[in-house]
Length: 191
Image 1 (cartoon, rainbow, N blue to C red):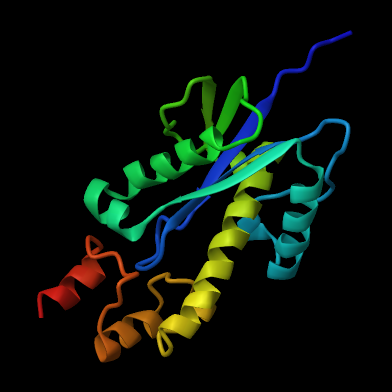
Image 2 (spheres, rainbow, N blue to C red):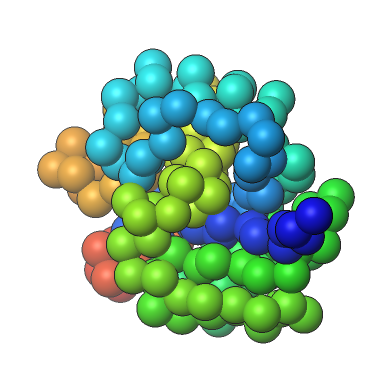
């Protein structure tokens, strides 16, 4: 009988926004329990992502969601914070993977074999699953931030630098969840 190795797909979301954490997920899919429709989270509707997120959590052998906070992003930069969130996601899986497939061209420091795959979220089902979990988790949190910081439009733009968001920063100032190391936010601090 062929021994299958545990492979984790790993991805993050939230490198580009001006506000909120960067969120990563790691998923070990169950080959005996396939999930139909996995794809790059950016190519799916919000409704489809949410449905797949529930299915992934039900069918995967293991899954984990982790993050790096705004303060960490500002202190160590967004790339390092993304890698830290990925590392945390893999390290908190209930099963230790023997191989981690990482979306992108950088790998975090892990105690297993790794392979970076550019556009992996559209090539590897486990990375697609991770991208979906991470995006749903981050989007949900940013919708909740709309209640804490009304007027910024977080529920709509999720912290990305849209015109609406930049105008809200100009009118309302920055919040504790804004990334002070990012240029548009930095310019507000310099006023």
